[in-house]
Amino acid sequence: MRSWLLFVLAAAGAAPAHADLTATYVAVNPEMDFTMKVEVAANGDLRADSDMPGVYLVKHGGSTYFVFPDQGGPAVIDLEDAVTLLEEELSRIDPDFCEGAAQAGSALTLRPRGTVTVGGRIGEAYATAGRPASRPDVVISRDPSLAPIGAAMAAQYRVSMTLMRQCPSAVPMFTQMQELLDSGAPLQIGPMRLDRIDTAAIDPARFLLPAAPATREEARALMTRNRLSPVGIEVQPPH
Image (cartoon, rainbow, N blue to C red; front, side, top):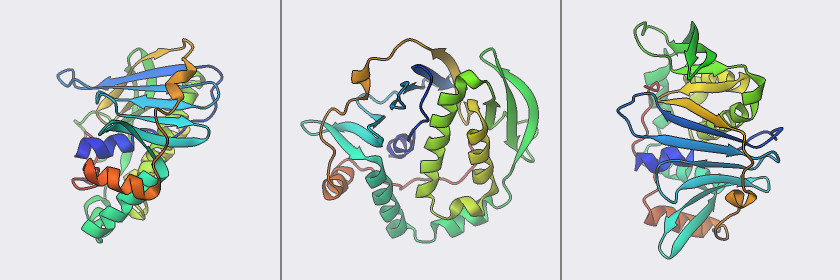
């Protein structure tokens, strides 16, 4: 269930790029089998795929959609509807969620760890204060050629924080993470690291919707049937 939610928040938008760009992220832990591919078109369209077959995010025509398999074929939900419905469900399940988040995360902050190399690229590392032996929580590159990927990942995080309502202001690390993602492209973020960049042209068909978007009420029924729920959200620093 948590995998569904995390992928709903996997990507939300991007600034127009100078050329098509595809970034592939893999797990930092080599024992974990995980891949996420983020494709950014020169016109600003975006698509993000993970290892779940048929599940992806796509931005097309200025709007972003969540696509997943349903009975009879792929279902398409506008991401704004998905976030609104998930927030409603979270409020119903745990109306004091943000208060608990503030208590759990008010002392969490990110501190600089100097420069590190990730996949041959140099970036500035940041890790949770008080954990000197831990690996960085995020590594940021200021390479201009990676700017479109940075914009996409920053937008992703911003949308995820809308689901947290007022929680970001209560947890300093949330705000710090947003500022870092706004400043550059993540070579590493949480359990993922940038593995490779491809500048080959992307087929425009990759960004087309496979079905008409559901209405708000249809989206509610789809999410209930497929158990898309915020149950299981954990407020803790990425590992």
